Length: 185
Image 1 (spheres, rainbow, N blue to C red):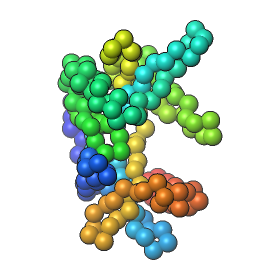
Image 2: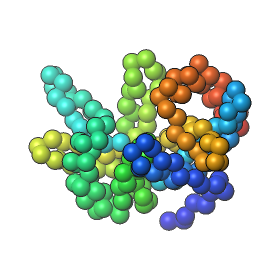
Image 3: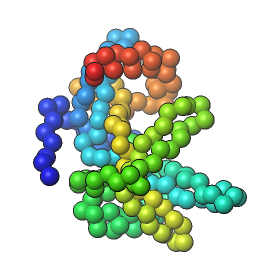
């Protein structure tokens, strides 16, 4: 398989727990005198979901977000993905996998509904399923780019936005998205 080469510079962001994430700088922008960057993780981003009985004949996919639950299932998830020559990484913001994702097969493709407030659909590729302590889990790779908005610090390093800063920027997000899509097209 041919290796992709990106021209974008790379940076490392660190969260409050000390986890890091290597990202490409996709775009720089300025909002109200503050400099921001749009980042794209270097490795493929993934989600782990657990399948929960919803009281009907169907099961509901529930995103695994609790750090202690991730810690418990991570060794099993690592072992399952290593069979596909993928290395799962515990990184800031989102879990990632290093390695070449398998070719997309139609049955492995899923569209998950976002929150009820959003009409967005998320495209995911099933990488693996596994059981841990009688609970079924599935690992999905994002098919769409997983962008992260960060503010540039005075030291020239990107800083992840706090929940308060994200809330403050929320009214400006449509303008920021318009600015970005104009540049990315």
